[in-house]
Length: 225
Image (tube, rainbow, N blue to C red; front, top):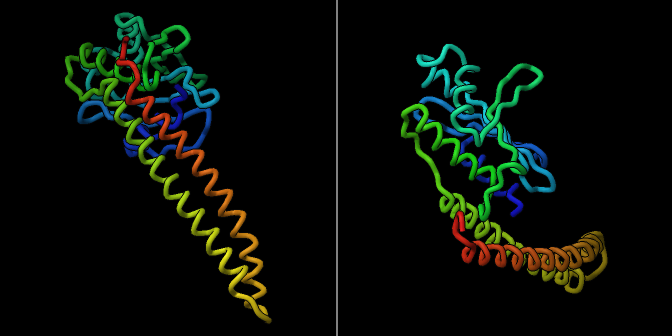
């Protein structure tokens, strides 16, 4: 599925300041009690296609006594867990990478989040850690929670559109007379009526769409089926 909204929602829950960039989202995802994984997720048309993980903070806190450098740590990790690769930026920063075209997992709410689950599990094994991890059902529950909130908000939007239409009608047809006040009320009424109608129709359409997606998510196949 197109997972941009879900990934942005999860990233915001970490407390990270998440931008509205349609192509890249980033966050500091907690690992253990003292470190964070920097996550960079890349999208095209709201669908994720790859992800990068900067693990230097994890190395500094939990692996610097085992490996002479972060580069050695990243090399050893990707040598053992070949699902992941390495990518180095022009500035020299090394990232653990995953290209979804080469590593597709069926029936996930989000490839970004599914791969994050795999990464944390592998890091726990590699470092002998027991950092909190999340499974597919956790991500799906967060997705359902997001869809429910969106559905509720669009439901409120329908009511707001209807109220705006009624208010516009009252201002246009009831507050009549001479003077600036009734004239301005009439102008606002002419604006409020179509705005309320269009808003209610749009919110109604989106309400049905979110309701359909929510029902689909509840009935969706389990991870790996």
